[in-house]
Length: 256
Ligand SMILES: Cc1cc2nc3c(=O)[nH]c(=O)nc-3n(C[C@H](O)[C@H](O)[C@H](O)COP(=O)(O)O)c2cc1C
Image (cartoon, rainbow, N blue to C red; front, side, top):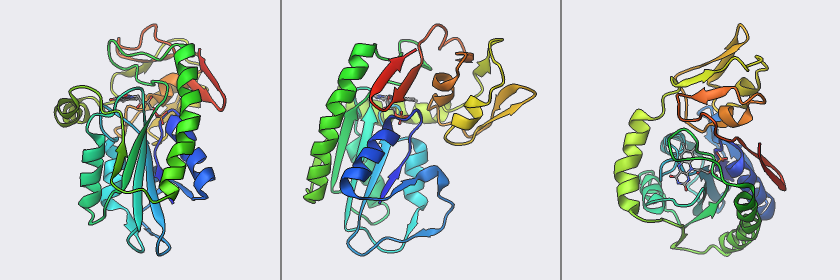
């Protein structure tokens, strides 16, 4: 079984590719309503998610803390997607798994096109870079699925990057504390009230009323609404002005 979260679609695509290669079932964690999930004895469990500020998204760590499963998994792995680097995600993720009395056997990062635009200095990748990342990701998913099938153990293959400890244990808590607010989101006059944002938000945090979206208290900062808007009418404070959108379409990557 693969538990996954995805904002803009990169991690959903990776999760579906892995599920196909491993013959495993996919569960989108937002759909989890608290029931006990049946795990066959000897079944492996995977977690697939994007990196948010050099750590797994809070929504994924909260899910790990509360998910109820019928029997302890025999093998646990994670695959995270990131623009470039994960910080100390392997260590942090393993600690959260251990807090449940389980053990994380392996973990991988896959570089995918960057989706983070809600801060100065951050923007989507150029088309050529995005395409190179997708192409390399396909081979990497094949390699990862083979290693998982071989039950490889104590194997963590993530690009942690520089100042990893500082980013994960100092910056990430500040990000979770101060940057998850949806308050800076607004629409320009270009908004046509099409509800694409409402339908795209993976955590159902957007509601269109009187032809305009409003954001609730449950934002993950995934920026799916910014990228999905057909009018590019969604902005986040001054941070997103003039920035390009990103869309993953199976084999085609486009920065519109
Ligand atoms: C809020 C936010 C924070 C991010 N932080 C990082 C980061 O710390 N390191 C990194 O390499 N990429 C970072 N990214 C990029 C994403 O991890 C990457 O684009 C990922 O593939 C997006 O997956 P998704 O399409 O499933 O949401 C961030 C993206 C967002 C939206």
